[in-house]
Amino acid sequence: GLALSAAWARRPAETGDQLVSEVPLPQAFTIPLPLPQVLEPVASAAEGDRYEMVQVETEAEILPGYSTRLWTYNGTFPGPTIESRRGRHVTVAHRNELPVPTVVHLHGGRTPASSDGYPTDLVLPQDWSETAGHGHGGHMADDLAVVTNVQREYGFPLDQRAAMLWYHDHRMDFTAPAIWRGLAGLHFVRDDVEDALDLPRGDHEVPLMIADRAFDSDGQLKYPSLDPTLTGEIGVEERFTAGVLGDAVLVNGAPWPVHEVDSGLYRLRVLNASNARHYELEAVTDTGRRLPLVQIGADQGLLAAPVRHERLPMAPAERYDLLLDLGELPVGSKVRLANRLGEGRMKDVMQFHVVRAGRRAAIPETLATDLPEWDRSEAVAVRDFAFRAGRMNGRHGWVIDGLPFDPNRTDVTTRLGDVEVWRLIADVHHPVHLHLVGFRVLSRGGGAPLPHDAGLKDTIALRPGESAEIITRFDGYRGRYLFHCHNAEHEDMGMMANLEVT
Ligand code: C2O
Ligand code: CU
Ligand code: CU
Image 1 (cartoon, rainbow, N blue to C red):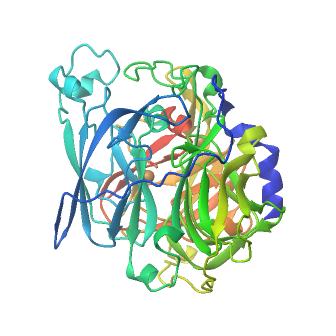
Image 2: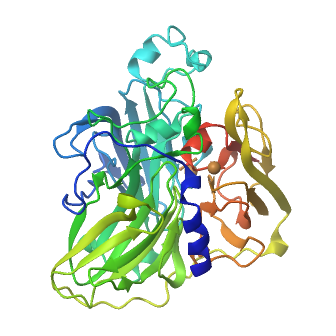
Image 3: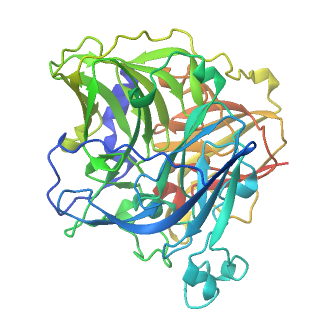
């Protein structure tokens, strides 16, 4: 763990370029942590649940005294949380009332390709569908004649392990600004394996969506798009091509919040929903004591056994399922969730304030027994992919094996059920994400995986110059899927490829 921390801490700036807010940012640990609302289904039957969401522009008070325009699912940022059970079908009908087309992807979902949110599979806004093909200039005008849906249903079989997934926008070339403006929410899958464990529940299970943002002089979100309307020119200003970093840390949409807790055991479901910022989390008491972050799960669900971390690196799109034991702290204690990689105010994330005595609870020493174990010898293919800087549309961009994303090119064809080993190599930080499957990390930098590589992942954070091997079985569904860098600016600037499962 220590070697990793040092290497990461030396290069914080390489994950992006810093925006500077033009309004005073609030004092840390004064605003209460918001908890996203759990969405009620509009209909439930034996086979599953149906939900409705409307994508709308909303104003919200993120900074005290300022009203900030957001793009939201159902009017909130984060969007509403969906709670579902393994194998129980979920339908989400999305209606788009935003000024631009959108795409919804359930990140970490084992989803049929038709509902996976392919980047050109658009939900059009009302006025675009009425004027399809006219007047909108942008390079997507050609596609408009064939897609005229303002509403669409996404279907999720959710035949997968319990995990915290998240849904977010995935429109080709415009994912980064859309997520930045607020299009992200959480989706939990529960199962019997998880239920059988004695883990903290109810208000002792706390979702934390961490995302950095910056604000202009009116308190509006600042984002250096070439075209702020997001209908025309693709990408960000040249100096932000490494990725866009804000100077305020939001947790569940609130800047540096405080959460009142008791001195019991908490389960933290953490997502790094930032476009480009990496964090290295640690929990420190007001007496300077570091509390262990006990990892019990990764992107794709519970580990076999807990892993204790002093610090935990977290790249965009990664999730960690953590236990934080406050059981020895006197009432009145404050525990800071800090970020070792940040400078200045970015060193803080949020604070837990112990306001009452809680119940002691034990940390289970064995967890899930349903983790897939694939062996190298099962692999029918070994593939190499290089994630590097390159050119896209004549500008600086990011490429996989020399090529920027092209929705009309099949980059990889794999057969349903096959086990494969992928060797990934990166020039700078690239969090690499595969749709459809979870994978195990076989090696990193030619050596053993790191402690935080444990479990089943869907995103792996490659460090500068580093290679890693992952192994997976392409299970589930046939069709066209994606793999890409989840630095959202890199993704928009070409670092994505098609994976055809046949
Ligand atoms: Cu979180 Cu392809 O995305
Ligand atoms: Cu995904
Ligand atoms: Cu990248």
